[in-house]
Amino acid sequence: MLRRSGLIQGNVAKYTKSVIKKALLEAFRGPSPERPPFWFLRQAGRYLPEYRELRQNAPNFLDFCYSPELTVEAALQPLSRFKMDAAILFSDILVIPDALGCKVDFVEGQGPLLQPIRSERAIADLRPEGMEDHLQPVFASVRELRRVLPPETALIGFAGAPWTVALYMVEGRGGGESDVIRRWAYSEPESFAKLIEVLADTTVAYLKKQIECGAEVVMLFDTWAGLLSETQFHAWVIAPTAKIVSRLKASGSDVPIIGFPRGAGALYEDYVRETGIDGVSLDPTVPLTWAKEKLQPHCLVQGNLDNHLLVAGGRGLGEETGRILNALSGGGFIFNLGHGILPQTPPEHVARVAERLFSHDSAP
Ligand code: CP3
Image 1: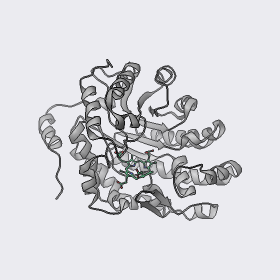
Image 2: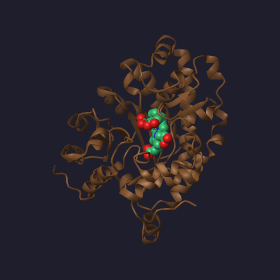
Image 3: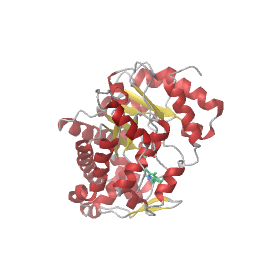
């Protein structure tokens, strides 16, 4: 039997009598009166010894992702240590290609490997109609998390954005020059658009279902957005994201949507103005004063502590945390990292940043 954290059980009893506002959701309306809410990208994972132990229950990572009992526990683990204002569903962006019938393998030490999709014929073979059935365990995890989370804690659902998921599907892996996908997108845009369209449609259905099951915020990870030049960025990042956002809103959902066009540089501005998203996650390279002037007037900003600084710790970590709080606390803001927590991160460094945030002290 898996243990459930004391924090969760204790708080349920304490709060059932009054209606509790969730600080993380309130932040979308403007500056937080007491302290900015916070959570960390990849807050569940291998930097936590209790996650490494739990992970032993399913040697195959996708099997782990499809076991609600394990994923609920993994999502709760960081909360019982650090008391973040939100839990994020424990899953992976690559469950979508897997659900569509594209073979996905997580190879220890190599990251994910996929059977590449490189033709219209291969796109036509994808099976979007099977998505909901295949991902039932993910929806069960969302429902159960919403049931057990304390009332002041928000639940974040997520998906990969079409460009980033397409990149894994076409290249068969992430990173590198990604020249196969770029050659296809640049030289035969009508044919490549078919893959983006299948992914955008599937993502809308997937996120709608997460919202129906209890997700209170959804996030779109576009990890590889920074590879694209201006025109291509508009075609493959902004346009599909805008379509997903407008279709979720048209379905009657008022759940805030946070986009993460990692590495977009100055194009963050077009992204915020043209996609209709409610919040934007900033990578560590985004200058804070620029974000405050150009992005925060349009939507909530989230970020952007350097994840390597969280590994290093020391005085630099405290100073940078203070600098981010000073720059962005005056508007809609969620404190977070600029990219996911690295496996080599000492949990004590995460604890130190969390304590600093609870003391709502923006001095360096
Ligand atoms: O707390 C959380 O945020 C956990 C949920 C989560 C995971 N992956 C779990 C995971 C989320 C939100 C993701 C998103 C994800 N997955 C992204 C977008 C965010 C980003 O980091 O840019 C991407 C690009 C992926 C694809 C992916 N999944 C990669 C590249 C890897 C290998 C990374 C590595 O460090 O080995 C994964 C595997 C993965 N996803 C792990 C976890 C905890 C590690 C696998 C394990 O525990 O064995």
